[in-house]
Image (cartoon, rainbow, N blue to C red; front, side, top):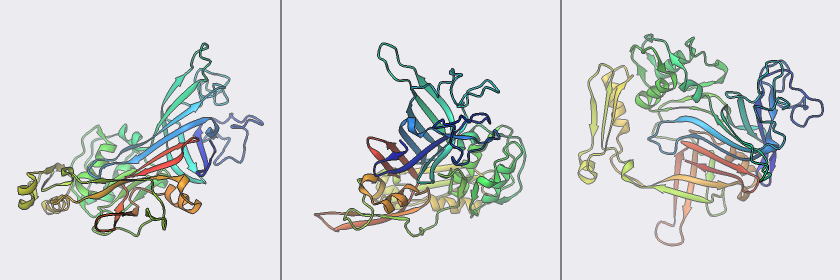
Length: 393
């Protein structure tokens, strides 16, 4: 599946994790100019693209009010030579030195297109199906992967009390803790807009959960792993967006899309917002007119890490959305309908990027609607039959 018609050149690589895996003339283990290929036992990646039949990858969230969970990638592959089989000691991936399978859980994995990464993460599960001699079925494997938010979900803090500091500084403090030691080279921390209090952190607190409490309940920003593997912290989104990275239109003048959905529901309405910081007094903002029209649609955040009640009130005011407004919620794109330049631009879209979408109509008024929106989630579907499709939330 290295080349998909109208899609691009795709490379799926997995870290076999040992240094004696080079096999002369082997299609996977015998190429010395492979990206980052090394023979010292560290990050030895082997390409497994040709055995893959389908890839589905998702990062971010589908609803703006949701929390971001670890990104996931699910790979379907055929395995006629049993190279993925952990019981096969003759596999090119088997580590004879340690007598262990090379393709074991938590090995690094990465997917790229035309040299640009679409997903970086780790293997969390292999589901192997041998088939039967009766059906003569070729063995298949389903490889489930997650980005490094998964690791942070399973990393826990020792009890300590941080200093009062900016939200972004607190993220750095957590990542620098000895029980975390998150690599500095794979961080992208934007300067925060809020100050967090010096509140004690309990023994055994989940690192990922604590980071979410910073982003969701204090900063109102984002914490996620980017497509190229950087742990990213975005500060609170203001009233203005950056210029659009891609402009989508349905009239043939810009990047084409194959589907467009809208969201117009009471789920959008928040007419009463309450934020209570640790040790503080609950701060509430509400809209009486909206409550009369739509009944009370409330959100409440308790135990916020914000350092002052004034900041808690600012967050409550920020969260208030008293009037439902229709908006485009997701756009679907098929690479087969795009030019090469358009594919290249769409493929590398990232969470937090701005896109512009125009919908034209043949009846009614107005004749078209244009919205600029921030990306909250990205979904890739890639296979030889249907090519590459994306759904952007």
